Image (cartoon, one colour):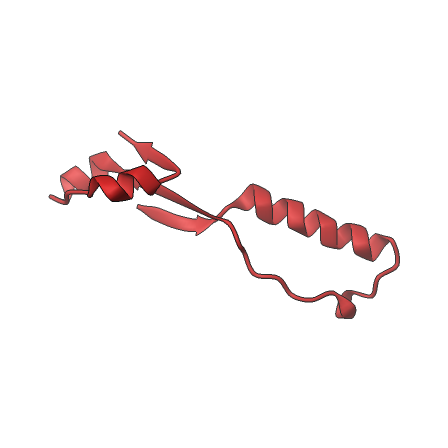
Length: 67
């Protein structure tokens, strides 16, 4: 199982900040942002090898399930 930030969203937001700087904004005036979108991947093969059962509720919320 992996849970982390959605990188395409992070890169898009970074590009928006760069655009602001290139248009004259001072970097110190731009607030620091934290990730707001996350990505959940569940690997069922690894879970089975570890003897774990993944609840269906968790599988339904996953962004990607690796068989």
